[in-house]
Amino acid sequence: MPRPSQALLSRQRIVETAAAMIDADGLAAFSTRRLAAELGVRGPSLYNHFATKDAILDAVADAVIAGVDVSFFTTHDWREALRRWGHSYRDALTAHPNIVPYLAQGPGRRPAALHMADAVYGGLVKAGWPPARATHIGAVMRYLVAGSSLGSFARGFVEDPELYAAHYPHLSQAHRLAEHQHSVDEGAFALGLDALIDGLAREYEATVGPLPPLEPRPDSYYSRNLQR
Image (cartoon, rainbow, N blue to C red; front, side, top):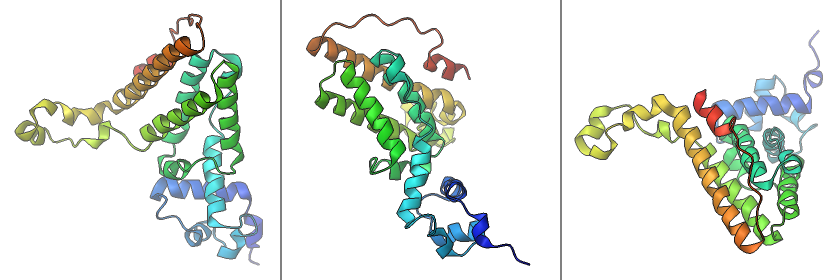
């Protein structure tokens, strides 16, 4: 006696399977027909759980953002909170880079994404930032994190030393970047994030008021990443 297909389905299983398909094949290749086939059910069965394909994509995107830690804005100085949140945010996105273009459209009605935006904005305003500036900071952080999560800078250079030696003398070591992908990509992000926060700190002191010194970070995220 065949098993009822409906019993195989749940929202969680649909989201997990869709996420795995998008991770493997990209957004362009994703369809509800392929998803149903992967789940071993008929297409209409999906619509008992999700009304549209976009609703499935929203759920996948929100599941990714749900993994971002925003608790730092209630426990740390806003500078350290931004730093730690930025790394947590990037970790979540780099684990699922194919969904990033969809995430980049904004939070829409997605609960986890709106919770993250609310926590960040609220934390910055509570720290003394004017509301408009807090909005700008949230936006520029999304630009930095999403942009850095779309792909590897280091792996964008081919491992062909002759190509660079013949025509691009200043890139004579570019063929080695891929073998140092982690330190290049993580180091670049950490550098950019630190530079952004340092610039914001200067603006804060010029427009809002003095800031207390931050405690040293001997176990900073940047140091841990480079030691992996």
